[in-house]
Image 1 (cartoon, rainbow, N blue to C red):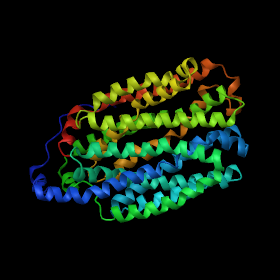
Image 2 (image 1 turned 30 degrees about the horizontal axis):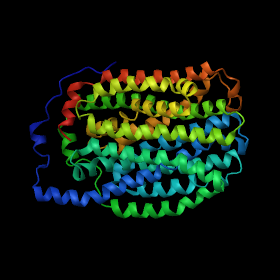
Image 3 (image 1 turned 60 degrees about the vertical axis):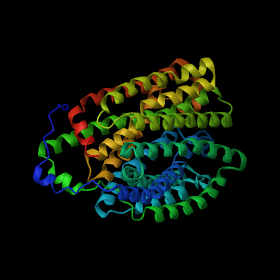
Image 4 (image 1 turned 90 degrees about the vertical axis):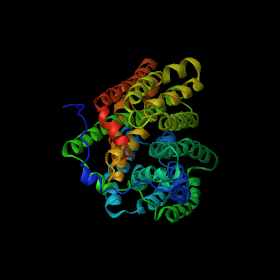
Length: 446
């Protein structure tokens, strides 16, 4: 059953009166802002650092495939395992974060993810690689629910434009890591070998300590969240959860596109340079970096330009506009060269990068007492279901492995990119199920 646009019942006046007065003096507001800013910007830097590492395996996939003699199933598993082990446990870590009001998962997840994912050069077979990937990606998964929740709440104190802008900065800070990660790992591997990545562990662990000190006392839940929750009528509470599941389902599709494009980049690069493993690896890394540039730019623009309470329309037309370049990445790259492919990869990111940050901040407003859970559902849990993307990509190119992709006609690879563009269109269509009145109502509460 779809969501119906019901008028949102006003909060119970007695319960509402128990909500703490949010009006503070200018001096108090300046004091809050001054104390929150160092923690907020340290958090942003930590997101850049931690998001360098998850893209190592995708960026080095062609080299790892050749080095470890992977089967087609093992190659696909490299892409599928990451979303599963990083995303699925996020619901648990989010629950624990909210229940125990702890920031442990942020700094510990950063240290754990760096230690394991920077050690992949020491893997001598597929199973050693997968163990490092599982532990490392679990660490990065621990970080993200509390990180996004802290970003939203600290932004209320540190920034003029509040929660949505803060979450967008957080998202885009991660994209800086996504941009630099492929460039760092492919170039370090080419110059000094894959084991040289282990040198990155030392500064990362030191930064985890800095993050622990900066955020140990920072709040991550909305002020007065207990009173706000008690004041909600039953029908509004149910409407909020229905909206959460619509946002979640659409985000699953967006993350399938995001993950699947990284798989297709490797297929397309190898089809262009079947005998040049290093060249195909660098082309794959460049495409992932270009897509990450687009994600950073559109993530920031989405958070700045999409107004709270008016998310529905932009989430629809951004999905449509993003689907066009996604479907044309290989076509443009073949016709006009690699730079045209880079441009299309960056432009296509508007279909998911501009909308995902606003779904996170919207979910946090819908669940003010469970901002960690809201963030985990919109980020990790939905991303975990993107584990189907490698098999969907393989199906679209005809079921062949990476080593056989040169035998696939170019139209088949073109059509595969189109298959992911369709998912963006469906995600945009689901947004029509969000009630406008509910979005406006929760926007007024912060």
